[in-house]
Length: 392
Image 1 (cartoon, rainbow, N blue to C red):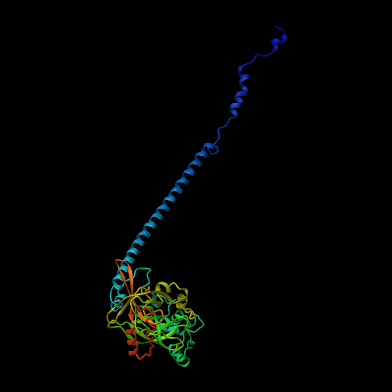
Image 2: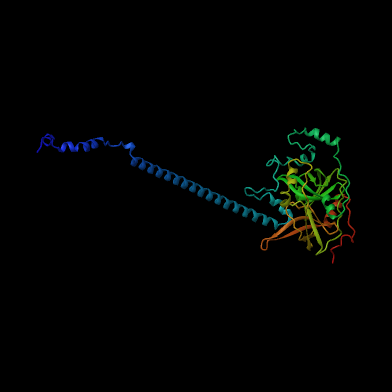
């Protein structure tokens, strides 16, 4: 062995392991808030809680919707039961005589949402319906609802000093124009509220309607498109006994309206038509709504239906059963033949519960003529040849 080999120090295990020990000392444990596993678990729990909360909210909403639907279903079930009871009362009332119908109207209880009588009283609808019929006819042409009314005495004096502007003379060119200017809407304030019906001119300044339309009222309002504005009417005479159902109204300033002629007779199978203001149609007429709100220039359209005479019941007075459709609001309106002559006054209807068929009934014109003659009204009777268009 040479000298260089002897001077080299021998390797020791401690010198070879020194780098590994240094690496082990440099590895330090991470704190809990810096570990990904902790945040992963925390995020998972948060998502789980969010999903549970959303599920609970959906369940709560579904339960609330279910309860609301159940309550609404029960409400509609009760409402339908009330409507069915109301309809049964009306059917029973329609089977009675006209005199009993008037007495039974006040005893009928209407369900919620059904206006009964058809037009509410001024206390119920003070925003749309005048407090009394005279208010509608006496309003000024300005149409302003916020103008304070003058004292009653001053209004009366003004009416005496300034007469109403009369209706201009009109010459109808056909039956349709004749009926449109001679048929009027009648509004009367009765004890149970504002009633709506139909009437027609039988002489200059005189309108006839049913007694049950005006009831106990002493004043009324009549209007149509030809008149141009509402006119105040005074109840002159009422006949509501022995099968009669007539009321005579006096209307000043309407001498320009051509009155209707009264037919001498009527026959089975004769073609007839009914003219009037049935509530089923008139209540949906925007002009009628405008009229109730004070627009004097607005007047609803007169409604026309046609049919034939089915039979004449020999009662006292005789009744005409016909197929022209009439409904509430047609009461007091004219039933005319093809010539435009009045053969009867529409008074009531009857409904067959078994077949659901409706019969329209009118009091014959001869009874109406006798009533008007007794009241001293100068009526015009059609010639026999003019009113026999449907005879066989």
